Amino acid sequence: MTATNLVLKNTYRDSVVLMRISRELELMEGALKATALMGTENNKRLLEEAGLLSTDGQAATPNDLVLALEVSSPCPDQAIREKALSLLETRASGQSGSGYRPRSLEGAVEALPDANLALISIPGEYAAREAQRALDLGLHVLLFSDNVSIDDEAFLKERAATSGLFMLGPDCGTAVINNVPLGFANAVPPGRVGLVAASGTGLQQVTCLLAAAGEGVSQALGVGGRDLDDRVGGAMMLQGLSALEADPHTEAIVLISKPPGPSTEARLLARLEKASKPCVVCFLGADVRETGPGLVSLASNLTDSADLVLDSLGGRPASRDLEPRTRERLRELAGRLGPGGCRSIRGLYSGGTLCYEALFTVRELTAGPVSSNLKLGGVRTVESSRGARGHVLVDLGDDRFTVGRPHPMIDLRQRCDMLKAEAADAEAAILLLDVVLGYGAHPDPASELAPAIQEAVRIAAEGGRTLACVAVLCGTQGDPQGLDRQKAALEAAGAVVVPSNLQAATIAAALSMGSLDPVPETGP
Image (cartoon, rainbow, N blue to C red; front, side, top):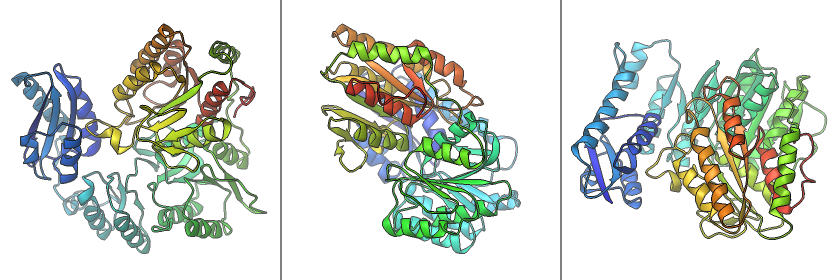
């Protein structure tokens, strides 16, 4: 194997485009692994750790684009180089259009004087500076970039709040603003529910559950996972709450976050005592307590959040009843897994929030040890599922897994390889995974996951074992991948497919315990 780098001087592509280019590069003949990154010091360090940095790449500057490939020995031929460059040129020409393309924020504002939001997706080292420039120009900011310090985040959000602007992010991957999806988002109808979330896939799950019930979204604001850290103080969640209260199209509000810092939680709950519209507050995994009379309801999971806000609007959730054939399939799997023995769950998630929700569900419903690369009380910390014992749930969107690869919602190859590897582990009995549809995600995830599931089941069978697969399908009927088509393909491969992540984790936990009693005929 040989690592080779192509360095394009003074060439920039945003991170979403780079993720797609990385995937297409890796599909080229002769390329075993590929990625496209800007030549920042942090990115070069990540490439070096992944064994993808060559001498040429070491000399790259932050303004240069590095195409890093691991190729079949001895080195890539000229055709691979030409194809890589052609791919970049195609991407550039496809985005260029025929009009003027400004090279600065000031030029963009001059060209589009009515624009009021800047979407920033550049290396984290420079993202805070550009976000500050955008705020100075009176623009709201959606900061897709990660690796921005929390001190910079706190400063930017305080600055935005004092100016009456939004600073969404950093690491904000999902939003629906005025019916326009930004980042990873699903095709949801307009409606009466406004959401503010320090969670990308959590926001997607709730909006998808609402869409299935016939309810739509007025606004959906992703504020970044650290917004409710006490160092930031929930600045944008509080601002989003006020904006949704003032929005005539919003009749009910949902707030979503992992458990916040104690002072931020107190501040948010005090503000909610004055709420003028029904509000559902979901602190994932936290104990639900009485809120007293008023308009605020508390939830500890995403499914209950959707159901509670629907109830406040006089609606009902879409049926999540298990179909008779699904119930029969579960009985069959439970019987074939047999009493006792190794029934470990291996969760391979592309969405960090979905993984977190599944993690506390499995922790509460099972007896075995639970491990993850996410932090949660009572859960052992591991970097990956390799060599771990008991139940292991892994967030594959973590930086460790995305070095040299696009995000796992775009590129499924690593997860497919891990599904097969888990199948060879005699302790693994239940595979648990999310399949996230929508704009920006893989165009046909079942086309890759279904064969991998079938192969995993075959590998286990050769070892005399039964392997169950449970998947949450997070999507809507309007998503470009085709919700029904994705479900049919996954079920044909042997997976049990449900629309709720809580439901999927509950089923997996029940199978691991050898009893389907925790799985109701309806729900959860």
